[in-house]
Image (cartoon, rainbow, N blue to C red):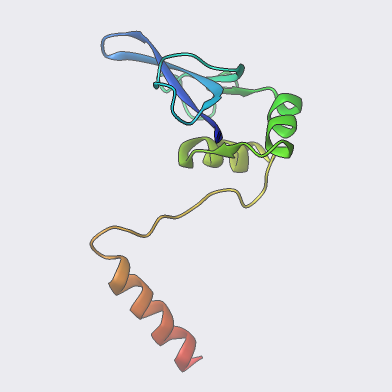
Length: 110
């Protein structure tokens, strides 16, 4: 079964607090999980050291065993330097085709 590293929401109404967890792909967002590997508090300023706290050893161990990080967690891992280049850009928005066309045009002219 697929294992993912993702966020589980906690906290009160309009006061979000997230745990970074490792869970089976089919388990509910705030349900059963295998391991807790960190926390994320979006209410803190971006430069605050406790905004994103990640246990690097646990994350690396789970990634070695085939866990897939969600988009948001991949950004955290890239930002912390644990897995450089882990940030994924989906490119599924309305302007994705336009951006791709402009990029191809720029490469062709260069």
